[in-house]
Length: 354
Image 1 (cartoon, rainbow, N blue to C red):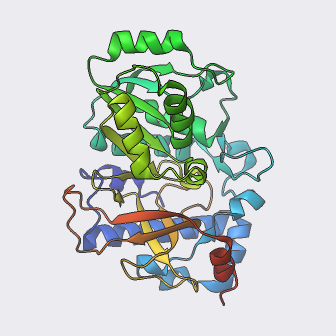
Image 2 (cartoon, rainbow, N blue to C red):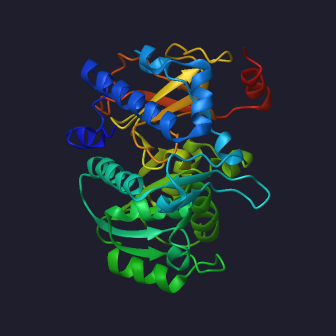
Image 3 (cartoon, helix red, strand yellow):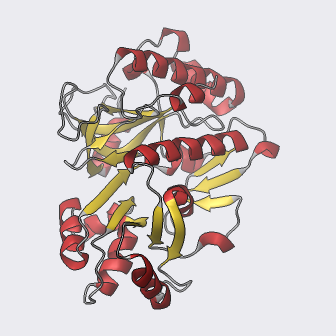
């Protein structure tokens, strides 16, 4: 069942547009489907009603679970005694949260895959990191939120970690000034959720004279709050560049339901798939759409082995660029755009589809 080693042994994590990769990827997802069918009764009921695994030949043929199902049910393909970590999605206390159950093997594979993606994206260069969040070390190490999981994951490329916020969410100026004094003259990383960077870095320090020109900013998630403020990705980058002189900004797309399988934005504004994951765009009747057309984003990943999250359909609207598209970034993965969250009417249309 485990194809992870074969993918990890590949040199280029972005080399996905080739027949050999598609064959291996289809085998891996079919293997995961069979595994979850054997070990998760809820998933078995779903699959048995609509699909014969052996008849699936192409990536577009894979069925999917709606991402919301992880908020309503505890889906896992492991025994309770095998649970090593529980991940929960971010959200307010009034919102339902996804709960993702990992055994030790799945957790270790997430770290290996994320480390390989980060190593290629950032040329294996490890640097000090300023994290726009609180220090999560006092939390329960067996239960992680999406933000804490991201902090631990992305800090793999950090030589040393500095947390900008105190427990009360105020700026820790002692930490900030020490970091700037010691590390600002050479390359360093800044990491955080997009909304946290806007709220705590930009809004609280935009009248200061801090210069982060040597910083590489890595951010993702948390766009809903900025959408409400009419802050687009373009405006977000312009504000940080103008205020703090940050030029190197890397946005990523990913969900806690598929932690480890992330998509980085290339310098020209497209997210790019890796060998560990794929993207399909589906219409209102869940039909696969041609490149250029907008629809719901389906995400596939070879990582989820302890829970059936290998193929999910999100509430996000996206579009895939032409498959023969040659981006100036030079990466050979599938290029796609995320246009935002689907409106309720669009989601109803999909749920009503026969």
